[in-house]
Amino acid sequence: MTPFVAELVGTALLIIFGGGVCAGVSLKKSFAQNSGWIVITMGWGLAVAIAVYAVGQFSGAHLNPAVTLALAFNGDFPWVDVPTYIVAQFLGAIIGATVVFLHYLPHWNETDDPSVKLGVFATGPAVPNPFANLLSEIIGSFILIVGILAIGANKFTDGLNPFIVGFLIVGIGLSLGGTTGYAINPARDLGPRIAHFLLPIPGKGSSNWSYAWIPVIGPALGGSFGGLFYKAIFLGKMTTAFWYVLIATVVVLAIVLIQQGKTAAYKQPKNILM
Image (cartoon, rainbow, N blue to C red; front, side, top):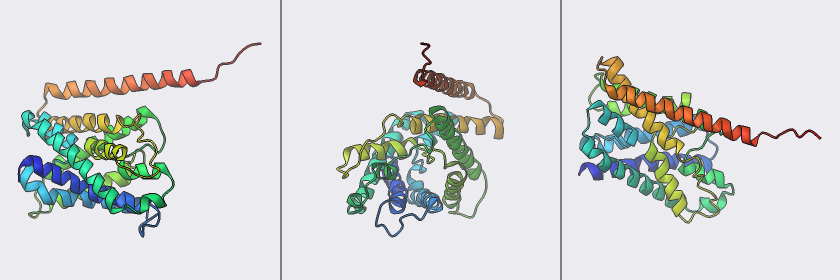
């Protein structure tokens, strides 16, 4: 199996299990309906573990552009291979989301709420606030990458690393996922969102493209900085890329905050003196 095929298959498995648990918990007349957030976080944790077990030996099982970028910035992965991995991850995510759609085929007609249907495929904010939502994705992705690198630095019984990484995903979901649904992976969100847009889902409504940039940019920035932070603080190897990515992250957050303030001011009702 080539690394491209491995990343495609691994990411597809990730979304089949992860999107599948979202569908089971959310869609009407599923036996798992309303089983709750803990079930979703456990489902995603197991999704990551199973996908890593499946393809780790072939590609390293990045399954996430944020992981690929972090390793490339760290010097642990060649930049020339980054586009190949990312394309495979997005294609795999679209394929995985399509499988979830087919598996739950009768349940889309049974479910009336378009937002519930979208939630099977893509994340969204509990409280819409672009600055806070972006910051949440940055923090979650930063923790993800630092956690993965820290786990990798420890010695476990052979074969346990993917299982421990799965628990990291559960921990992030339980502790940090309640704000945005913790995409922490551009492919995990954008790939299924594209599938939602393209698939003939009955009564599906909007794919919420106005929010779609947050679970892409946030994980890319947070993941990249997480890798550089680990290298600088844990390993004592400071690089100029650390400062470039940190500055880029701060600038993007500042632009979003300023733009959000302007939008709020524009929407504020004006007092008219008669």
